[in-house]
Amino acid sequence: MKIDFSGIIQMFQMEGFVALGKIKHPASDSIEKNLDHASFVIDLLTILEEKTRGNLTDAEQRLMQYSLQDLKLNYVAESDSAISSPSNPTT
Picture 1 (tube, rainbow, N blue to C red):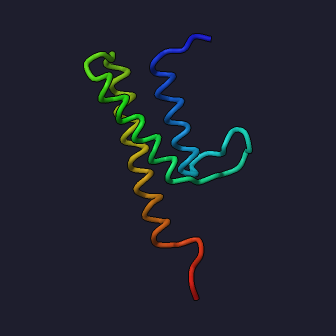
Picture 2: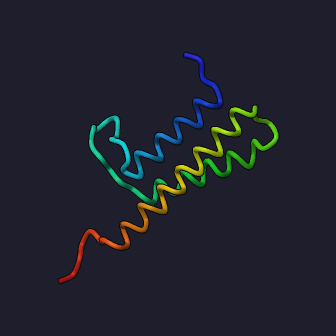
């Protein structure tokens, strides 16, 4: 199995979407939302983008930008929904 940079980006993107509860966790086959971990993955990809700037192919750069944008937008949406509908409402 050949590993390339695009595969690394996609691996982190998938991990982010699992943490956002957008796709099932592959090991447990269930939705497991963890916004702290999603934020960590976004930060990790951001650092990776900064450190590889100028060294990526055009396709790798587009994939990195798209992945980060997609994760950030979904993170904001999930954060907003967590605020507007808390899991333990007080009555």
